[in-house]
Amino acid sequence: MSRDHKSAPTMGHAQGHHFHGNKSTGKHHSNSKWMQHAVKHPGALTRKAEHAGMGVQAYAHKHAHDKGTTGKQARLAITFSKFRKGK
Image 1 (tube, one colour):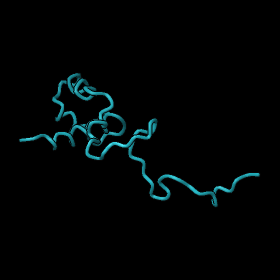
Image 2: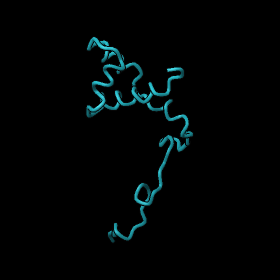
Image 3: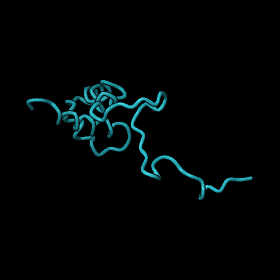
Image 4: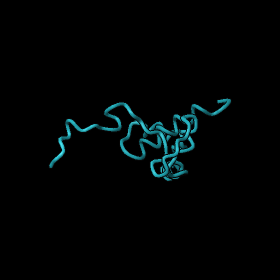
């Protein structure tokens, strides 16, 4: 007997359920600590900027509209720069 997908109950984004945590352990972390988990490869954007002969923020602003990993890293660097104290 095949299951009708239209009548089957669904979980996840379709009903507005969002999971904010570690999928492997099921542990949740608070939304205030999102920055600690945002950087996947620390120093990667810095290395790209140095290789291009630019500063990190200049490189980030130049590549902020790029697609893919570099664009994501650039936008995150710009976001992080807004959180710096005294700047």
